[in-house]
Length: 124
Image (tube, rainbow, N blue to C red; front, top):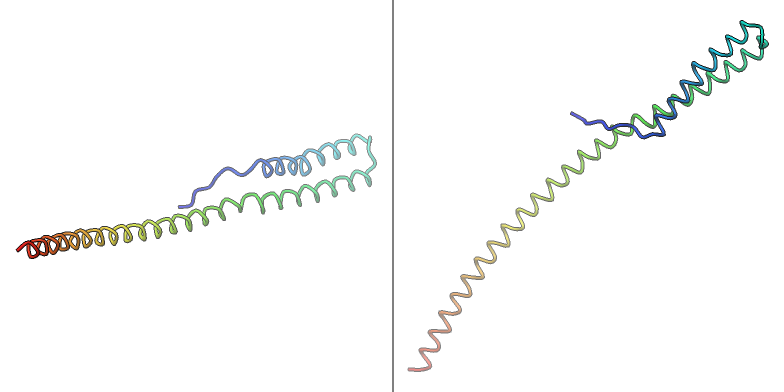
């Protein structure tokens, strides 16, 4: 299951501004047109521009903000997989090093025995 994180503040601000452009401004303009304090043509232009800008801003805020956590979770999964591979390689490397140290200890013991035998042979 993928984990999502909270989107960054720029996305939240973009969505709030787009809601203002999509809801609040058209609502107030329609009220002004219905109260005959604003010309109908001018009000329609303001509503269309406001809704277009709000829709565009909302689209890009959602497209770039909410898809980013899905991308980052893929990165997390990839990093976890790489970390497991590195840990496996380290475990194999440690086992190899332990085996080499055991062999070196055995070689040291054999060399000490040879040294002792040579010392005894020289003294005779």
